Image 1 (cartoon, rainbow, N blue to C red):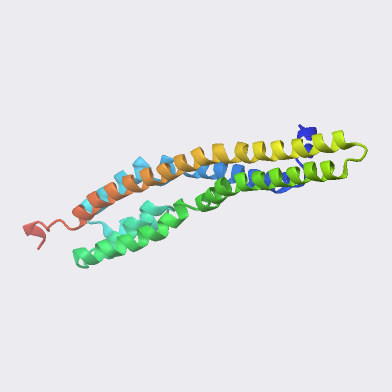
Image 2: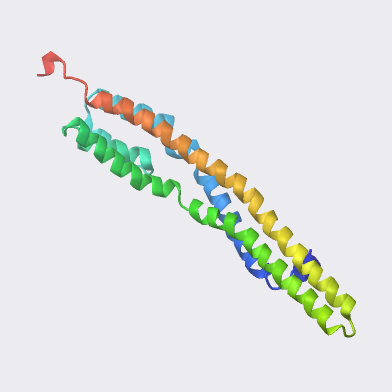
Length: 206
């Protein structure tokens, strides 16, 4: 393995760095983007009960003691419950866009690595070909070793770039779909709570 890395030449250094960064992003996002991190059944049940009972202060306090987009959006909904319907939707959309950035953290960097790794591999291919042409032009002693070194560098860097890019591409697509799924579930629950907050008061409460 060490010989393989050395044979790839200096371009293997940035390829190694981006592979470490990609792995770190993937592991962190796989750990973070779990359903229970964002939509715990106990949280949904608790806030639904409080809102249904019109215990608005308790619902806001409960949400502020928790992190994640769902409690933040519920708190915003309850705090602005008396605003016009369109204004509430606009507030929730603004907060939702802010929370979306947290869900997508690191995914843009992973997409950049997915696109950039093959280009780094191509750069290694070019430097390897330069070695080959240099060896042919000089035609001195040790040409066989220099040709072999150039060919190895050209092929290994291309292989390394694809090894990094291909898994990153599929995992990035999965993480994006996971983010969309979480947002869809949050939106569905928020819509239910919005209707619950905006329901008419019973006549005996008026």
